Image (cartoon, rainbow, N blue to C red):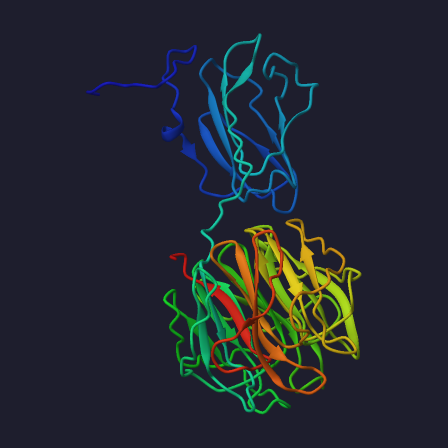
Length: 428
């Protein structure tokens, strides 16, 4: 062998121990509840479903080294437990409990001697999950403005709504939208008549706000579903109805980070429609309110893997046909809707998915608006309908990064209702 060997540790036998980069890494991700580790190896430990107890070698030489990595960032949920198998760990006998329970942690241990035993060379904790850059702009699209439309309106990073853009794709109402892929958006479903759905097409929106032509439907067509981003770069459609409240469902469809809609999956929670959803906590989502034979205030949390949780008793006024979006980087807001009349209330959602009680609204009471993020940490509600007269409205209301709703701004473009909106673009 020629050259210089650096950053290696000699075992007691005189054999050079592997450095972390030269370890023999196990090709299989460990998902079981137990593992018998071998010196000189690295292991990816996935504790998504269970705790993993690792048994270290019963004998070791100075310089023996083992590395463990939190593969799925789940050690905070199901921890890694170390059984030192008769040898000391940091000077303590193996009767002591040694566990690692921080999400994103990695553990690099080296055997020293009989006195101290196994010692961590590093046990770096990376508690914060990677955070995708926030979207800066918004897009409002489709909806009813006297008749079904395919009109879109872009919203700048400063919250200014642009004039109408002639739509692409099937004109429809009762549609819904979410961000995906970090900087793009997707519109889904809806009704071509306002009374029957039969439209399951989707339309992707580029990170420049360009709406693509129809993508053929996947799964049953429905209208009035909720939509939200989850997992930093994916989206979910859930709940809805195939025909204006007839056959309300709790079906869901996951949207990949490339905008591909997956097949129908029967959802959790009470079937309903005219519910809405928003991202919160950086990688999760919440869906709340809606119509299930009457106005509801139930909510359902969505995990960062797209699993819809069971019903949570609602907070605030039962209603349907409102709008919701993220704000403040990791929180959400639900606003407006219909509950015995058009409403102008809002409910803030914490970064842990807890819905707060009603905040008296600012701006014109209405139902069937849409909402989107803009400027990285702010939001905008826009358009909607007077639920008593049926007149389409054209107001907008900006939401600060602390969740304060501003007064009405006269809208730009065609007033319409039952439209969708979502954030796009990470560039201002």
